[in-house]
Image (cartoon, rainbow, N blue to C red; front, top):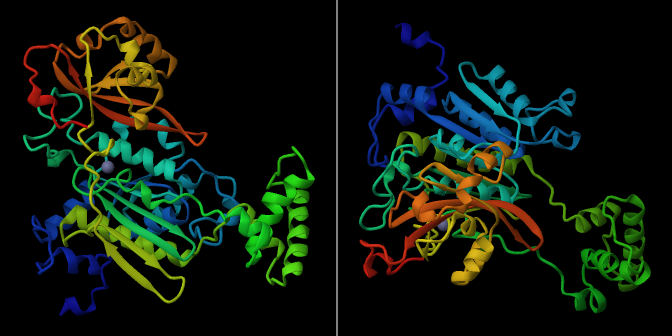
Length: 466
Ligand SMILES: [Zn+2]
């Protein structure tokens, strides 16, 4: 038979998942070649980040049969990336990661089309992100995750942003299913990693579980000063205490080799005094700069978990992860799945912060959100500056670019109530910058605005909000 000599097809393994039924399939799964072909033709995936995890993700997704992939990354390739970011070569150093990664995967996997975007995630207009069926995150920063999360959650409930929808949420405050933008988030740190599924409005979003990222561990100063037990204690003693004692007022510069050498020498002396082994120059750099080595195999494992979840969401071939997988390869191997729950008061994936306004409040007041919020009540989480405001996809005021700012400036003096077409109760989106611990980051917030003393708004409507 001709079948026995046919070369194995690239989709052989995929076919086992997509062409036949099984006990673990999702509720709407319809196996068959049509499903596989539709998946390849219509599913659009965005990979955010083309670093260690991003390279793995692009390869895994392409080999899982996805043919329409975009990748966004603002970085250029550095020599130190080459040990694990396997799509890059020495001759690529200095080139944009997104572009080289896309090219390399397309060379190896026939039929896949990867569109690179060499820019910051904030540089793309919000609707750009709505064009994808699934967003997969391979990032190493909390701020970037937080931003993409807020963007994906902002689509929640919004009826196609040009159409005027009537209902953002159904009567039970449940989001409309077709507006849920699934996200798969991977992250690694040394031998540890996580893969999680975020279905805005259904599973906890990134912001709901922000407490999972504890502040960086700092050693108590008394331990450093009196009872050091490890090489890291000795290094931090030299770095945090001794440096200031000797160089009054002069800031320590971690990128200055002379400064680093000074800390290293002092740490060695300290370690000798207490009989502690293990202080080396590279450990000194690692502790002071808080460098955590990236491990290629951790990226590979986490990426595989993320690519599989992406395939499961897109095809329904299996129930999805519920909802947070942690991997720990520090001592032996440990994998665990935890089902976290939503924070019902979440500012990002919840129905939005409810704010009651006088019908005469102008848009200008709203854009000065810091002042505006203080006038009403204390919403410390909401503090935004340089806010832009939109309502049902229409820009009411834009801080940038200058052309849009000029076009929308005249709206500032108008009452928000009129700009919102005199609807007594509706949602607006506010983008701006927040600063936390001196760090500025972009964010997007949803506000449910209710106008006071407008007919049709009852106490029932305002009860139980935010
Ligand atoms: Zn949330």
